[in-house]
Length: 288
Image 1 (cartoon, one colour):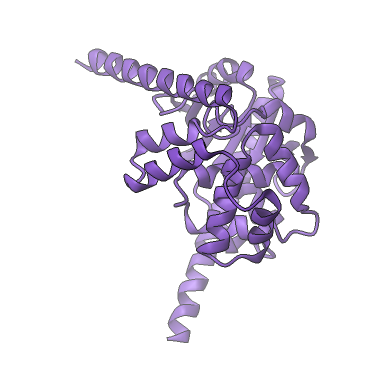
Image 2 (image 1 turned 180 degrees about the vertical axis):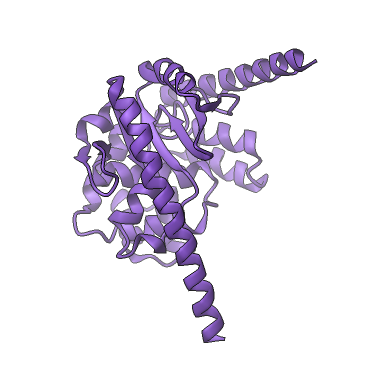
C-alpha cells in the first residue's frame, strides 16, 4: 500500500512539474506582452503560491495561470490578445473577465477582487501595495502583498460556496502560517474592502470543518458571530439550496458588509447575466 501511494505521489509530482514548466513559459509570454503595452498586471493564486508556500512547487497542482488587471485596461488587453492570436472567451458569468488560451494553456483574466461588487478594494489598490519579482519566471511581474493575496484566496473560497479545490484549501491553510502573515493586517484589509463578514465565514469553516487553529484565531479576533446578519442569511440560504451557480454567484456578489456595496454587487451580477445571454444569442445567430 505504501509503495502504491509513493508511486502515485511521484507520478502526481512529475505531472505537476510539467504543468509548472508550462506555466513558466506562459507567464513569460503573457507578462512580456502586457508589459510591452504598459498594462500593469498581477500574477495570483497557484503560479505564485506554489513557490511562496511550498518547499517544492510540485506539491501544488496547477491547471492555469491567474492574472488580474485594472478595469480600465480590460479592452486594451482584449485587443492585445486578439492581435497576438490568443483565443478569447468573454461569455463568462462576470463582467470584466475573460478566459484566454495561449499556446493551448488557459489564462484566467479578471479585473476585480472577487466577484464584481463584492470587495471595495480594487486591482489598482493591490497593484500599488504589491511586490515586483522576476524569479522563477524570468520576467518582471507583480504579485499581491501577502495579506492581499490571503484575501484573494478567502474570497475565492467564499465565491465557491466553501467548496474550493483541495489545493486551494491547502493554500488557505498554509498562507496564515507564513512568517510574514499577521492576523490583524488581514482583517484590516478585509475591513477596508467591506468583506469582514466573508472573512469570518471562511475562517469559521476552516476552524470548524478543518480544525485549523490559525483560522480559529482569525475568527475569534473578528468576533463571536458574522458581523453582518444580512450576509449570514443570504449566504446560508444559498448553501441550503446546494449553491447552484447563478444563485451562488449572486449570493457572494451581494455579500459586501455595506448595503450600498451589496446593491452594487446585485446590479453588476444582473448586468453580467444579461450581457452573457446577449452574447450567447448573438453567437448562435451567427452560427446559423
